[in-house]
View (tube, rainbow, N blue to C red):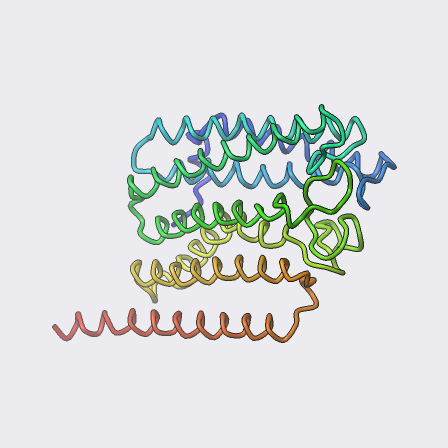
Length: 310
């Protein structure tokens, strides 16, 4: 599995347009973080569009690359990608528009306009979820020739869907903060906008549902990167099937970690202050993952020996 930039000319053009537009927005937003003194929910007002723009740069680039791995073009997948581009542009347009107006884009029902914009964002995310799912199904059906690449891409697409789903508690009734016009929250046990980690803003005093959401979404990049590293550094020692099985182990562990982080947040627990129960769960995950990986490697190393003996 390789990342061949020479093939970039054949990547999905609407996705590349999205990447270019989001990169420009990231630069503008970064300037705004320092040039605009306004603060919203405890953070520079331009920080949210900056984070979303960077996220979509990564998302669009990864999807365009994944589509280029298919053995033949898929019009369904390409149309789904166009839908993703449209929904991403709509969502960022609303976020930036609300920044210009000096108000929040998420959970904001303080006026009919704000409520309508937040509803539109919610609908856009549902459409994006469906389009992403379509691409995932196409990837499974078309079967990327490289087995390790196919495993990494398939698990990455699936786990990023999980990352979207674990964000649902943010808008459930349990997250009603009791503030008129506010219909959800990122934080659990504390109000949004309190003390948080640098840049990401994750709460350091309570649970934060954005953590599991973030980790799950970026499985889209993490697993392909792991596949590339396995091929580069262990390609001669481990065959393709063994590397694919290692990626299954990594994908399963990544999914459990996403759920574990969401569970920790739902209990109102800061990421960096885990209790004994959380630590036990993390330790169990580490031991199970290491054991499974060792078994996969041992089985892979025995196979060539058996083939020579035969």
